[in-house]
Length: 420
Ligand code: HMG
Image (cartoon, rainbow, N blue to C red; front, side):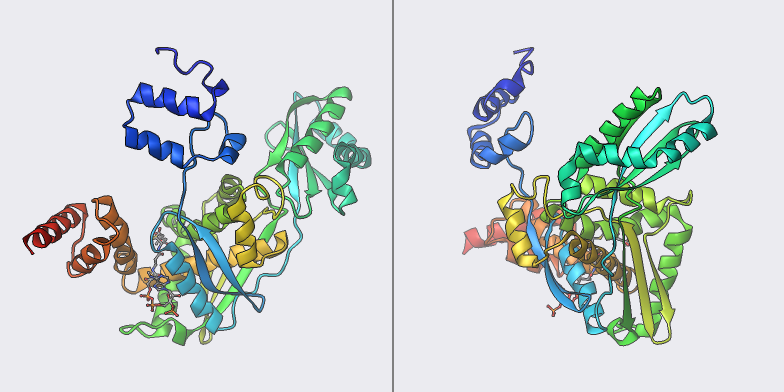
């Protein structure tokens, strides 16, 4: 069994589960859970497949974007995120909703050259051959051009002592990573044949040609709490947004709040959220300092919010057509195009951010967030579905709640019940 990993990938999923169960001494119940949550599709999608790992899905409500109401599926394990997105979006909806113009989008295919003797001369040569380079890219994937897309632009950058030939590729409604890689590699081969040393030919996830902006304007009266008037809340939110522009420590948390919403929409819509994450954070640091992706400022009687971020999303391709949940999610959201998905996603990110900043500048995050955590806390200490509401109700009466208290509360409930 020392070499149990060798050839693991050649086994059937069932054989893999059995081998792991033996090596890790899994219990019969654990083995059954692995088997019962497995699927044929999963085995087709990833390597060394053993089972499906599921995450909760909910819907964010009240998302009004460009005068249209959306119900947006979100997949996430963290309590309070979906509540917060709906909460922020509701405040924006009451003030007219988000404006998120449908924006042109291209992916960037990067062909990088190394060992250049004369960078300026090479750059001039490349620019002079732009038409043929774009033609070669398009010939590698003719169906993209037939659909109205394809390689449309070429720019040449000189980072360090490299040359990067950046192809701007319109992938229409698709996620498009594979197509871009195919086209970039074709250009890479051609440049190699011309005598260049090509070090890599691959999509860049810094999708600056797929930027999406969403804005909103919230009347002060929709920001107030029972204790604090709306104007004061708006001013505090604006200052907190200034802090995220000045301080990378705060910016990382500010952006984490935004990505709570964006990642959840990306997973539910079948998009590659790792690609979105890496692009977003690179974009947040584009001027050399990591900053908040959104800004908030007070204008007259309104709090005005704006977010711009790279969202190279797709509504076809990748695993989108394979996962039956993803297909249902598009039926729920009624989103039909990549442009629409980008507009809604950016708006959800801004709604998420608004709710978090409003909570931070009024009650503090723990008040709303922790109360919604109580249910998962109850489950984590072993409460059954029937016991969860009773545990939650008791936890809400305490000012300091942690796992030890939840355990103690559950034990008391069970003891009381056994005494009845
Ligand atoms: P509340 O003020 O108690 O809500 O908010 P409400 O009872 O006044 O209800 C208003 C609306 O909020 C509701 O409308 C719902 O849309 C929504 P209605 O249905 O009444 O017409 N709502 C809910 N939706 C679903 N389930 C619920 C629910 N409750 C309200 N249970 C809330 C409570 C938790 C929403 C609020 O306190 C909040 O938004 N807090 C922020 C929570 C948050 O941001 N969580 C993310 C995790 S923390 C984090 O990771 C990021 C962070 O660090 C980022 C940063 O620092 O910037 C915070």
